[in-house]
Length: 82
Image (tube, rainbow, N blue to C red; front, side, top):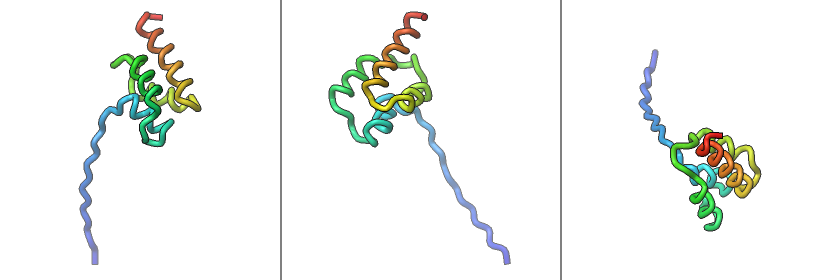
């Protein structure tokens, strides 16, 4: 006797915003302190870094402050052409 089972799945891939990535790494999915959220919003420029680049930067830092400083420096360098 042979039983055939068909399973249908749907994968949806969407871009994750930098604040969401930071919440994942530094806040276990919860909102970060309002000052941290504000600083992140101030330094981030859309379409300069990919979500993968932001995720990599999050993984490289132990705290959000260091990551935000590194993010600001990398974005400034890209925007200025250096």
